[in-house]
Image 1 (cartoon, helix red, strand yellow):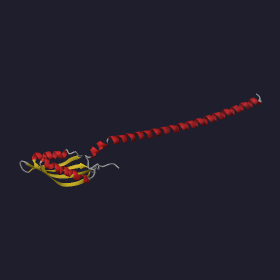
Image 2 (cartoon, one colour; image 1 turned 180 degrees about the vertical axis):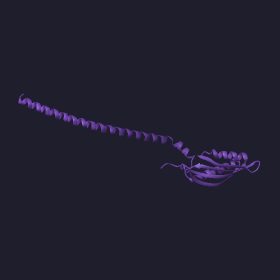
Image 3 (cartoon, rainbow, N blue to C red; image 1 turned 60 degrees about the vertical axis):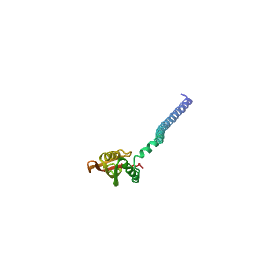
Length: 175
């Protein structure tokens, strides 16, 4: 073989090795960029999902404002709201034909759940049917209320007295 052919063969081989090297480097960079792109696409998808969730929650909050306000009225926000509740109970009593005396008012916290309740005790006196009706009204007041104790006693054939303890839930917002 001629010297020129050998030289051309060596140059061709060197260029072939360089081309393979460049191809390998470009392939490695392409794979690295592809991995980076896939990570960025996943981050972008997560970000878009968070945005969608945020906008959905904001839309839901705007749509449910009236419902939440109505629901909030069923709870006391703090113990001081009990004044309105007690006034409502005392105003309801004469309309049902009974007398009501508030005996105690305390704020309690349930040990197992941490829920706060405002506990109230009432002494109710009146005709037997009126006392029963008033206790039933207390149970069905439009508040988050539960009757925890009831002692009904007859004072005569027509007059009854009831000692009632009920609890009204204090509303708490998560901070």
